Image 1 (cartoon, rainbow, N blue to C red):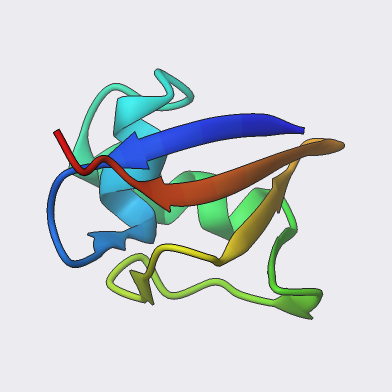
Image 2 (cartoon, rainbow, N blue to C red):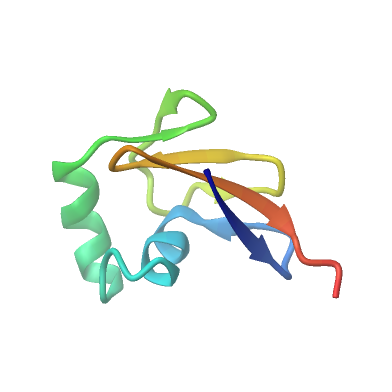
Length: 72
């Protein structure tokens, strides 16, 4: 499990994919989500604008990412 720290209230799924360098642009996010399964808290998710909050877990290509708040 990999920890992802965010400073904001939430991050969108599209922003997360770009942050992780899985895709390079917003246009690529849509194509990626059409071709790969992503799970948010064990539920399938394919909306690039879906808000992901601290405490959520995202499964992308067999890697679990734990989203946490960076209090700094």
